[in-house]
Length: 309
Image 1 (cartoon, rainbow, N blue to C red):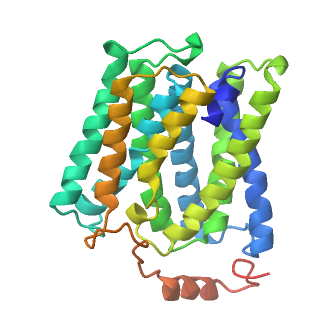
Image 2: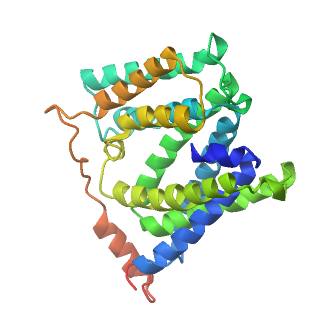
């Protein structure tokens, strides 16, 4: 929801570039204190970092433009459908985390909620207090596309952690995306200095340091040891909290259908992530390829800047 305050007065791609510039600086400090260094070693690390950066650029561009064309309530619900894509990928593609009947039901329920929400702007959706916060079908579709790309990026980041450390990967994927954001923004957008209002700047600081910086770094560390679909155990609560905050802070329109959609998405995610014993327990661990990673590092020779200070 913080991104909406920045988009009230600043263009979307510029907001993305500023947001991840802050995240890049945060990750530079993270890598220093973690002692992993930032130098990329070998073609594999360069390739993985560039592809992750390209995925980040596409995902955040779709997301930010989608937020601009939609509202906070729809953004909160639709972007969290990435969890469903991750679960589907792990079942049908990587086969790491298999779906049973209950999880399949959860996917169907959550997808139904997302579809209901997406169709609201075409039907009888209520009008928001702020005309700038009107949800549109193009905006919702962009948010759904962003959720799909986010799921692909999460899976690719997890695969990349076999050859590169989490902090270093997030630093470089931020940096690659920042360069692309600013090139596109300079070519197609105009930034008015008057747009840097207090809400816009506070929104950028929150998004850049806490979300794009700290949260992405922690997520990458978790992905190194845990199944991707199980690192967001409590994400089923996000749509409900997001809806409440959007209505209270952004004055998004209240609708019974909106609450039904939020409840379906939350219920679906909970069913997908609920363990067989009836609890949403700890994330399932996966065995990292630590031996292979260490062998690759030792064979390159030279001082090791990637593991410890």
